[in-house]
Length: 283
Image 1 (cartoon, helix red, strand yellow):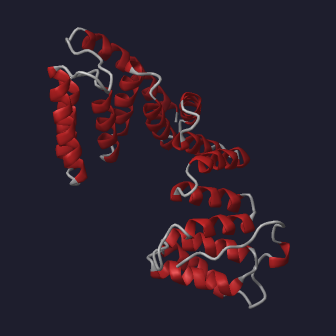
Image 2: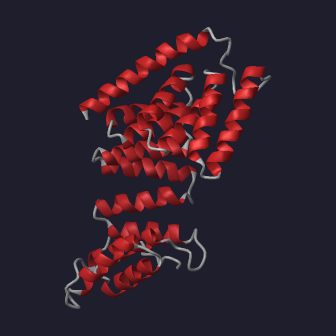
Image 3: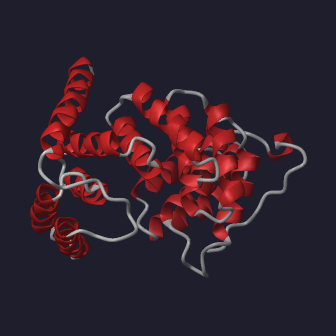
């Protein structure tokens, strides 16, 4: 961890140095709208070609095109952001962080860059840095669901489940039907040992899918909530459906549950939380 932190710090120093070089290259930072000079136009052409290659899963070609775009106009933050995304997908994580750091030197208040950088830091285990960028994103765009989601993810990674839950609810107030945030909210309720609320949240999530379209991870979490509530038969059925959808980890849960006596499953429906209704996920 110390080694990663040291590398991350050197990344920001390298970013600052490279910007001094870019300043003399004749390529200015141009806002994302308005007249486009020739160097930026060429950079964006290369960037679009790189994105097209990425869409076709040709990440190596995408990386080369986006690298050329950055060299064509080092202060084009769009090119650097997309370049960082492709580098990250290719496993070149510190190079990706370097590109985001350099872009943030150019546009430190860009919320999208804060979110991208925060996610990278979170996955690298640099939670203090991730939290700093998440707070910066929330401050800069309090109506951004992704900013609140990132802060919630960082809070959960730091063991602050209640804070995480509050952040996810703020995000859901902005995008009520966001599947990823609904699933993460249900997971927090599960960790807080509130299976009834987890099940109710999963029911809302289930309504966003068509018949027989509910993915395995949602069905598996539904089974876990039902199991915690003592609903053994319902949990078994959810696990079986999750397995049918390719949920490998549900198999172990199903096997463990089937080994219990009929009245030996943990929890009790009578102990469910008051004031909430259990939902049934649409299959």
